Image (tube, rainbow, N blue to C red; front, side):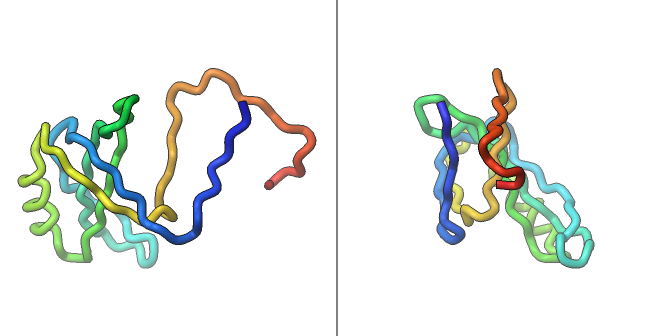
Length: 110
């Protein structure tokens, strides 16, 4: 089976699921200037047939640590949520790969 995901450069994805544990306010480095910014982190069990897990991060502005912590306190284990995110920032991680096949007919980098 050969599959490939060709997502549009713009667009919003919407995902609904249940929090697997309490949300957490963490700190991450801002990609532009390297300053520490607060990030709200959630792990969801999505409302689909496979009950797929999804890690969600919502960055806050510099200096808004208390707002991120307040949001984390409201989001407790078992809460059903819907998140919206630009498709451009979606990253897929497959932790149960069984085979990796190389394609010798495609130039490297494509």
